[in-house]
Image 1 (cartoon, helix red, strand yellow):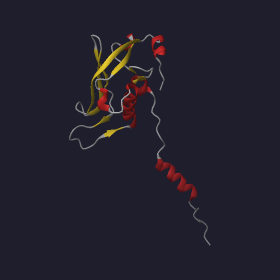
Image 2 (cartoon, rainbow, N blue to C red; image 1 turned 180 degrees about the vertical axis):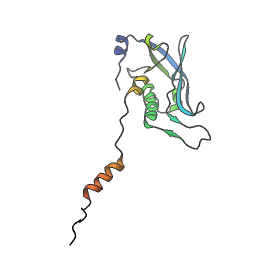
Image 3 (cartoon, rainbow, N blue to C red; image 1 turned 60 degrees about the horizontal axis):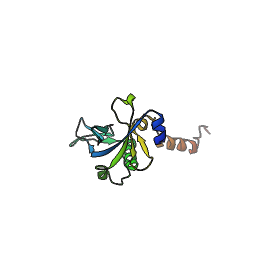
Image 4 (cartoon, one colour; image 1 turned 90 degrees about the horizontal axis):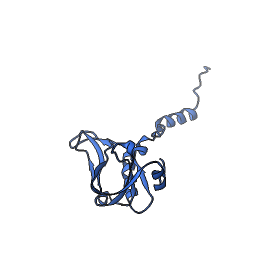
Length: 154
């Protein structure tokens, strides 16, 4: 994940705006998916931020799924804004970096006081590193340490 600064964003053609998080929602109400959605508003504008699928399930579902990347995204947003509780995102002030190429989408938010930024598009664009299955490693260890069977007949 790229560490951004305000200077990097300005050099990259971004415009920096001040905004307020007027809604902060974790929801599995639509289409059987779990999402985080923040409503950001400013001087005459408003936009939703987030909306990436973080898990699957709905009220009454028999099965639920999610992954660590989704939880990490929520934690990084909270860290960037500077809150320890998700509920405190609402009514927090942020900086928003907008670029003409994004056609109205907001991918980058920043802390209102410090030079701390989070690019949600960059975060989800990174390839996920998958750990090797532990079962295969255990089986290989067992095979390597198991005594050879005596195939000679006496």
